[in-house]
Image (cartoon, rainbow, N blue to C red):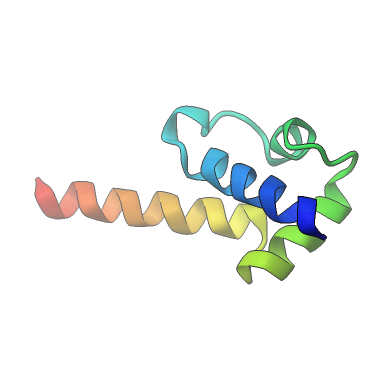
Length: 71
């Protein structure tokens, strides 16, 4: 559990990074040390309260809102 905290933090950073928007959630799971998607999704949701895909979409939507608001 302790190591997953660091892995999820790293994954969240990658999911928020617009330059990594073309990297799949599965690839991010692999890059952060998970061997399959199911444990990654469970750990991510337990830590953040949402799935990795929901997390990415919420950050993307927020960034788009800021761009529109500042235009």
